[in-house]
Amino acid sequence: MRKNREANGRSISSNAWDRLVGIVLVWLALSATSCGRADGTADSQKEAAAVQAEMNQAVQKVVAIVNQPVKVLPLDDGVEVFRISEPWFHPGAIMPEFRTVDIRKTQDLTYAKWHYVTCVLTPGVMFEGSELEFNSMTKFFYVDRSLPKKKLTEAEMVEINNLYRTIGRCQDRLLSLHAPRAIVIPQPGTGFSQQSGGFQPVGPTVSVHYGDLTLKAISGVPGRRMAMINNQTFMEGETAKVKSNDKQVEVTCKEIRVDSVVIMVDGKTQELKLGHH
Image 1 (cartoon, rainbow, N blue to C red):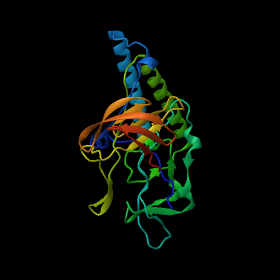
Image 2 (image 1 turned 45 degrees about the vertical axis):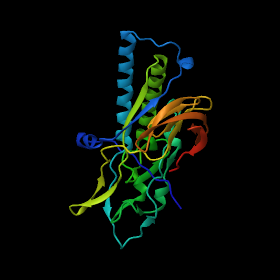
Image 3 (image 1 turned 120 degrees about the vertical axis):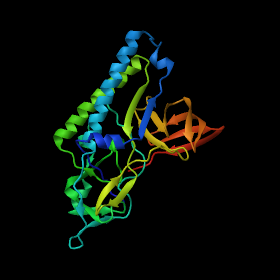
Image 4 (image 1 turned 180 degrees about the horizontal axis):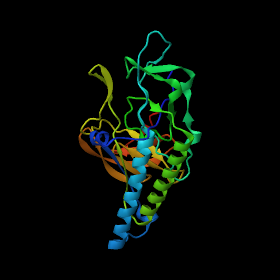
């Protein structure tokens, strides 16, 4: 039985950012009917760059809060430890509805039921259950999924809510400018390794590899939903090239549902389901 688990962190060193060489570029596609005519003037381009920079700054602050380091303890066989037989998190994440979501309502403190917890990804170490959390509305920004996430305070969750509003406002403004909206976040970590007598998180791989088509995120409200498949974001009815198995595949997004999408590839229709935490 898999338990929800995740926590958040406040500060990431510059060295850590340097190690996070993988990035996810989420290009939220725009339709001409919803955006109107593009304004190609120098002023509009300058404004779009400034708005994108403001959004990037807000995203970086969210990532720093969500990925605060959690205290790691050596595994002690003399105490009761709840052992999870699966990784901390399932693949996939829901992109938050930045304009309205309140992450205080989705904070999950299931780990607090146990004094100490660990999982198959973190052998030889344990974590205090009362210091951990999972939150489906911050999972989109988890950097290293080989580690549990630190429990956020009320003040930190309020700050993230405010940063989400900034992100949503910037997205709306970029939409009105007919400019692409990119959210740049680090790739999740790939594992947990033992080095020099202690355990350290394994950094992300240098390059991003795509296997089969995978639904990574869904955001928005009915009628205005967006879905991210591998490295490409779609709105209903859009067609785009998606990288899969080191080649470009043409994908048409036919329908975006609550937790799945219906797509057409090479004339064949298939459904992709969102992975759960």
